[in-house]
Length: 270
Image 1 (cartoon, rainbow, N blue to C red):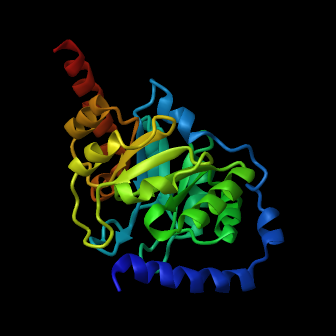
Image 2: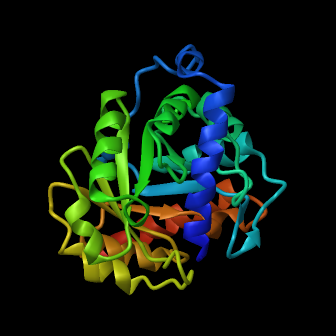
């Protein structure tokens, strides 16, 4: 059993337990549940934004502890000041050391920035949780879900006013895409081997229908890579470890974003 299979197997057990502890009615009474959601899709298309979705990520199964002492409020407000298009917040505790409170804190301190709940979603209950935390966007991983199940979850998310980012790892998952999906992300990291290859995004780009916003995820560590991917047509870029592994992720994001702007300006004059 690879790491992705282990995570998904655990999720079914974890979600089942949470359903017994907190009812959907209770989640729907959350202070955030009825707030108007923000559009990550619109933010990615906004030319004044960087297209970067910056992630708050303490730990990962592959890299182990990345930044255990980082404060959610400090990091995410730093990201917003850097002009990111969105914030990604991991809420998985067992494998990534994230919490639902992380997302709630990010929401409180960044009221005008779209927030993605980065989670391994297998059940509608998790979508109601996401809305109650203040998320605007949810992640559905193509490799974890059947076509039917992905379609059901995407449809339910849209009924809650949430946008849907679907992550794919190969062309085999393209037939799973439905009209209820807003954004398609190509994960450059193989979730079975954790090997990263940016070329993977380029190879899949033209196979993804143009009615979806297209983003590249994982392994982006240099501003020139963003410039290259933008020129290829990508509209967004999810970056996690590159910022989080530094002492000041917000400042690192600002420096990175400024370098991207300089790189784009230079490429336009060549």
